[in-house]
Image (cartoon, rainbow, N blue to C red):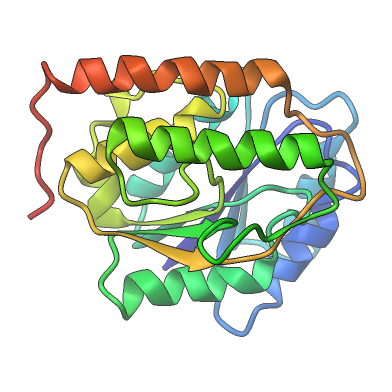
Length: 244
């Protein structure tokens, strides 16, 4: 079974449409929404959809207050591993990730041998739509910097559109993942890399949100840039479990 984890905070403009788009894909996906106490009623929309349309396929975990992207995904991963999901996806709620691309990420893991597939904005150039040029350059060169420092052959190291196999998440020691912001995405990929996982990038087009408010900031990128030094140094003193 396949599970798409969608963290939310104030996504009432998008949440019904993104859930519907995932549910209408030709291959069956379940959805787990991790909502951090959205005051705009995001969780209530999910509950209504659970009752009206998607019982047994749409799930909701409500948390008190904003606890960070990383902790939301870790909670979702653990939730999935307690159940029978074999492929677990990360995806944003705001349609910056095209739900149709879930099929390509799944194919890379299910049929092409990847342990972790990455929806990559930078594999075939710069495939970003409607971002200010400054933000594009900041994201692009941040990924180049991370790739260089950590020695990963990944072009889009900060990507948040990802598929993990169950075995990958079972191998990664989730309780040792420490970053909560977008550095979390780097830490997960680097840890999987150190665990001997096969990382495969799949080209996607990333489209900036049209509805709702972005949670991105310069501080988030600063955390990621400084965090890679900690990750690199910490890896010298840690033994990573191996997937094979």
